[in-house]
Image (cartoon, rainbow, N blue to C red; front, side):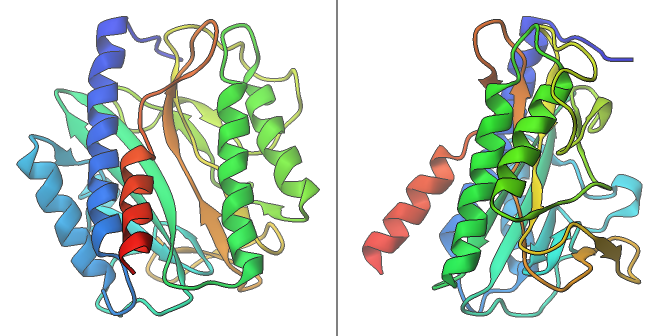
Length: 262
């Protein structure tokens, strides 16, 4: 059953989502060659707790950390470890927060130093896929319109769209109905209505769409070993245009400032 949120509840979700954005901005400040994903995890957890939230992923179905950190061919659900990140890596960082009884969720793929042009394009197109999906999250459209917008843009560039993992509704629970696939037919699926809050999260592979799970029971990688990118926003469906409740602005500001310094 899809639970429609009140305006007051959406504001709680916005607050949690912006706390996620702040945590990802803290990650952006320190992410560079040599840093480990465990260091990123500690920084994010401290920031979330210092601001009155709880890490939503930590302990969720037994997941051990605050962040999912997934480098290169890892698609999602990577477990932080003590391996230093390398120049030329890309790293998808997914974070969730519970605050005041409501969840927020967002993800961003970072470039570590200089990356190849083919991977740079993958990041750009995946972020465009997210933006195009969000534009479809308007009351009166159908969920399939969101999915179709993501899939068609990714496949136009020759990329693989992950099928087994999808976006989701979010609110008092981290994962609620409806599922939000990154593939589908235009005009299909549930009708979008005001009060629906969904996490839209394209997972786009440079190569084919196939994935596999590692023996840790969490980490999902591409089957062909090629890189994958992941961006995510928590979004409230509205009449004229979707309300994006999380934000990449603090992350982009940090990254822009770092480039200026370097």
